[in-house]
Image (cartoon, rainbow, N blue to C red; front, side):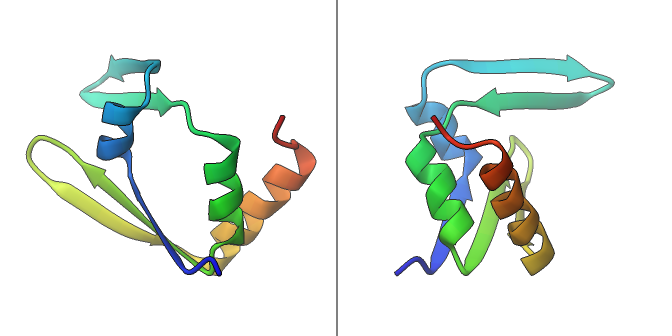
Length: 81
């Protein structure tokens, strides 16, 4: 079954080629390519934890039920190809 799904964007950046990023007002925005399987795993997970690792800090958050439901609706509206 799909239990906890821990996403480390820092780790994904090292594994995935094709990262696009911009910096504006001291805030970095990055996009990472992920597989359709990973998105499906996230949608099916009962708990999703997100870990952002920067130079000076690590931020860990948990995706609440409403956010997971919205994510599922998004994937249903825009199917993965």
